[in-house]
Amino acid sequence: MKIRKLQFGRELAALWAPVALLALCCIPVETILQGPTLCLFRRWFGVACYGCGLTRAMSFFAHGEIAAALSYNRLVLFVFPALCVLAVAQTGLAVRRWQNRRRSPH
Image 1 (tube, helix red, strand yellow):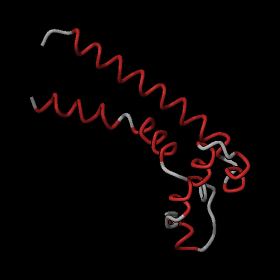
Image 2 (tube, rainbow, N blue to C red; image 1 turned 180 degrees about the vertical axis):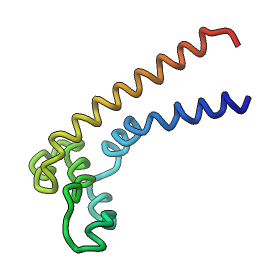
Image 3 (spheres, rainbow, N blue to C red; image 1 turned 135 degrees about the horizontal axis):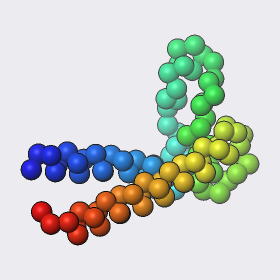
Image 4 (cartoon, one colour; image 1 turned 90 degrees about the vertical axis):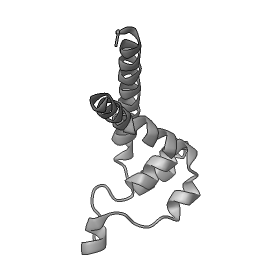
């Protein structure tokens, strides 16, 4: 029983990309803009790193505001499509595992 719970937890944790993508689409951009700066590099050294602004850029990109997204971080052109591909792959894998578990005898 404990092994089954561990496997379910692992499968649930593997769905982080679809959940992140869904959150980016559902949370209003204004809410993300009001949030604090999470970058430790920027907090400690006062210098922006390559990832600074990426959360805001991803949010703008998810809401279709491409120009605003690019103004925050140009890496969004690579990271957002990669997140979409990963989300589709993780969802497909989770569905296949779930179907296999239902078919296999216990």
